[in-house]
Image 1: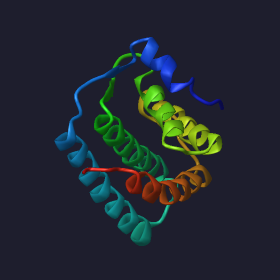
Image 2 (image 1 turned 45 degrees about the vertical axis):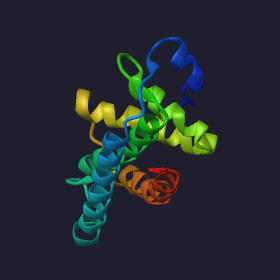
Image 3 (image 1 turned 30 degrees about the horizontal axis):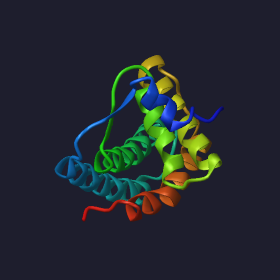
Image 4 (image 1 turned 30 degrees about the vertical axis):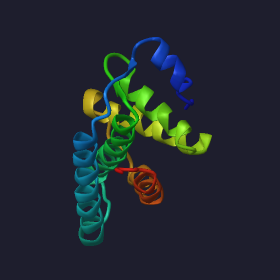
Length: 149
């Protein structure tokens, strides 16, 4: 797929806006992501990934990573809304020091998750396995970068 635009372009277009820092909401999102990640790892160890679980596991992985990105954004005084809001949130990964390949993969994940949610796409077990591996790799790095002080 492709990389999202530079984060500053989303700010200039008003998709991403400055706001007051919202530490309580960021803490909530962090806690929710942590609970969801624990649930995901339990689910994977008990059920694994198959044709019946692939779509829901991909959606869960996406939600976990996006909650962490939104926590970062709120702690840095940003909020998104409107068309391309999720893409703008993904673009923020670059500011957090993630590689283009990682940003691109999450952008692809965003696209495919939306294909499931809005267009009824069925994802493969292989794709769900790649997404799960990516989530397990990126999750601790996103959590580590959250500064609630």
